[in-house]
Length: 124
Image 1 (tube, one colour):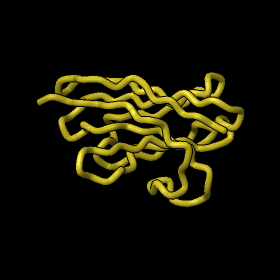
Image 2: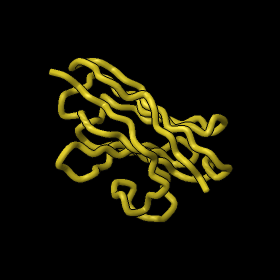
Image 3: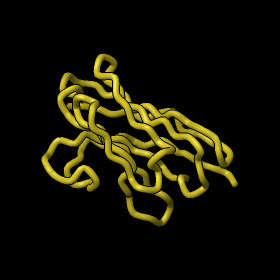
């Protein structure tokens, strides 16, 4: 069973940066796409970014384009989310997940193996 562990969250000021990491156990990491989602208090979980298994195709929520960068290191079984120019509206718990089914990269339905999440708080 694959286990995902997110890390790297914290408290930053508006305009600051954080780099999230998601470490995966298991041998299937390099063969599946990975995604980052977030959930703010009182809101539904939403798509943030995704990357295909080779790492040569990426997908972003419109509001994070140009600020966030998703990448992966298959040798380390890790996917990253570099977040720059953070805004208060980016405050949420961030989760990574594996895309194990065909379907829309931007929907949570094809993803599974959700980690426990890491809190990102951006102060104004």
